[in-house]
Length: 518
Image (cartoon, rainbow, N blue to C red):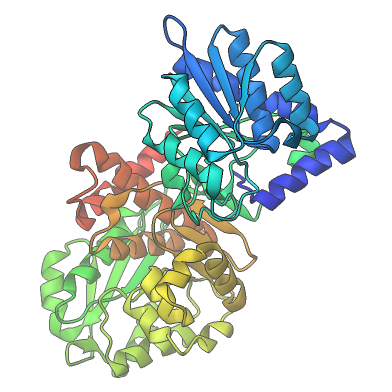
């Protein structure tokens, strides 16, 4: 599903108005009418429901005037507070304000903080509050009079409906530079926006509904597809086909290079997740000293001992690893490998010399820090990196705060510059491709914030690579299934105390549930 930035949505609006000839006042009417319908559907009560519309002086306020009129026509008790002088309302918004007034709508203008406070104190209680203060064009902190309105909305105990986006959220990034409305329902116009599906903004959206405001298909089709929300329909298209007459060799052989003394669990989870993800065969290459321990915990995975040094795979194992990689379809490298110098050198040689599709995580990423030029010579290879924000900071030299402040930009720039697929983990994990596309994941919850989850994801993505998916599809689908498995366990486990192995065991059920999606 396409998601747009504020600038891209503005371009769509302009093309609809200028190229097609649909007046802006008509689009505003459509937007407000559709938003009113969503409010009526959810919040109509017996008796006389009451709505308060808090409107700004721009087009978002204009949408609010249309909402007020349609609620009024359905018998609602509606009051509109405009946080501006009457003379400050211009353009299409002024047209709809006049229509509302001509229909008998009650409108109060409160251009000062004291006036707003007085009006709010006199109005009494409402069943629904509507935030029509700012639209998607806001990219700075809410201040003054509008800040007071936002703070007041957030103190109320009744539902708050945001028109297009809660005021205070940057629609292009999801960042909240100051205060923002915490909505119960957000009615987005024409397309979802990046800021609505990205944290921290996503945490303030409530239920998100996207409504059709009459953008012609000819124009909608021109909307940029550089940012996509991965939902069930999108993810299902990427599921590998399982032929009825297939066998274990048909569904790919994954080689996992993982584990060291004290980190056997990471290797075990990555390897077993490869099988849970659907690979026909998985071989685990691990240090000789821990191979017996690992072999005792894995019954279906082939655990092959490698020459080691102080509990980690040593550089002497390189030739054997290359030989072991023959006949395999993909590599998963990094979980629990350790941070020794020889191990780092081994990883870098493996990235440089192997020609297999590869997913690199954890200690494998650390080995690449300061050596990213290796990636630049692998443009024809399918390589996936799966860092969390701390690892991304080490890879780029940025701080974790800088990473989190511009997740889209950092992920996209890295993927394009180094010609890799980059999975930036976190709430609403991003998958960025070398052509500049960014996929936003829609599954998962806070229960995934525990040790070992990344090892499971690495094995799952490696499994999908081995089954023949492209690097981008394997990464985006792996992230989706990983989150979906956690979502399916939410009712039983909640969002605390969930183990990585719980998610690992749930992967086949998640895949089956996705395959049955209509």
